[in-house]
Amino acid sequence: MSSDKRTQVLIVEDDLALQKQIKWSLDAFDAVTADDRESALNQLRRHAPPVVTMDLGLPPDADGTAEGFRLLEQTLAAAPDTKVIVLTGQNGEANALKAVAMGAYDFLAKPFEPEVLNLTIERAFRLHELQRENQRLQAMHQPDALGGLVTRDPQVLRVCRTIEKVANSGATVMLLGESGTGKEVLARGLHQSSNRKGERFVAINCAAIPENLLESELFGYEKGAFTGAAKTTVGKIETAHRGTLMLDEIGDLPMPLQAKLLRFLQERVIERVGGRQEIPVDVRIVCATHQDLKQLTTVARFREDLYYRLAEIVVQIPPLRDRVGDPALLAHAFVRRFSQEQNRRSLSLSEDALRAIEVHRWPGNIRELENCIKRAVIMAEGNQITADDLGLPLGLEDVAEPSLDLRAVRDEAEKKAVIAALSRANGNVLKAAEMLGVSRPTLYDLMHRLGLK
Image (cartoon, rainbow, N blue to C red; front, side, top):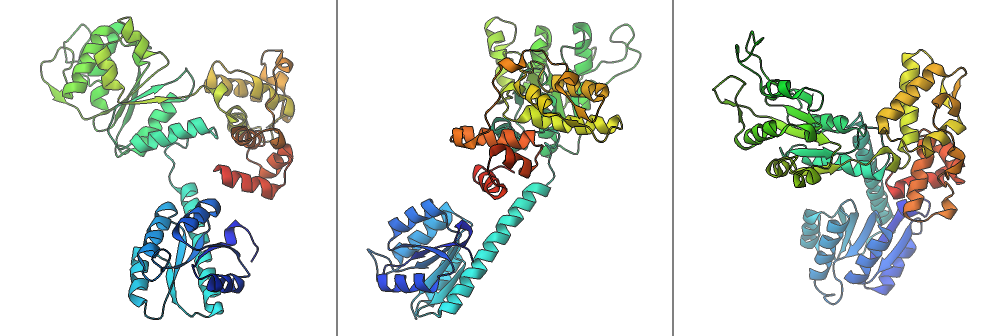
């Protein structure tokens, strides 16, 4: 077994002679040692070993077990996946069973056979690796309500985690971001992640409907309520009963309707236009806007009390220009989609096209990029989409291309470089490793350390 983090074992033993003996018998592993609780915790934090062998009798209570049990509890709290093998005295079965009940993997009585200890550690390592692989596969194959969102950017990934956390809370969510950043995709993902996913998702754009029609669209109307009202019609709020209602461009909602929406949020009942009956409605509200609603409240264009009703959870969506690696990643995805639609299966992006995509500011965000790629797929004459096919503004050479040299960047810059390389290479690890000037195993190690899939 090679000596690396995957085969590392921590030996916690205050008897230095026995500690040396155990380490010698575990020559197939990368063994680190500790002789008390404090040093063991330091080694645990420093090396994160998958397996720990532990004597319960540790100083200053070498004849008792209190310090050992305290270390076991702290180890499992800090690293729940760690496999702890407890080494006990001849008459320590009660303590061993207590340790297993607390979460220890196994126990061995002293004196033990080196072959038995090695076999126990091997089994612990294999179980640890199987559990890690199972977690990875579950994360890959679980139903993804946010599957419509393509990203590797840490900011957007944090937004996704927020959406998943609040999905079942029932709280009203406000999505803030520029036009074209994917607010409706996130709203639908919120609905699909919630316990309302079996019901309807209804969206209405408050800026796209004339003011005199918006009230009846939202709240519905009774027969004869106005000229042309030939029958009773259910509004969007009622249609979304038990489901989710997205109010897009909520900042454009007229003031009279703001008061009526506020009453609905407070009472959870509506009255149709021309009607007198109060109708209870159970609906989750998600609103979205590119405007600064807080600023609108200061100039009396948006009700402050409504703002605080809607802003129970506020999610800020970053623009495409601030998402590390996402322009290239999205471009690859759009090329695949539109190539299939246009029956041009062999199309790909050239290097100059990728550079153009990376340095463009994308004021229209994802919607602008989507339209740009669709036009390029239609217009491209060869098997590659070039910068000319994209039709982006000239002067790209004056903008610095993001550095992909890992030796020139540190910490956060290193993560950005890896993300950018993977995005440009469309997820091909070998190509990304060549761009970064590292080997493929090194890049896999980096991706694992940085938490990238």
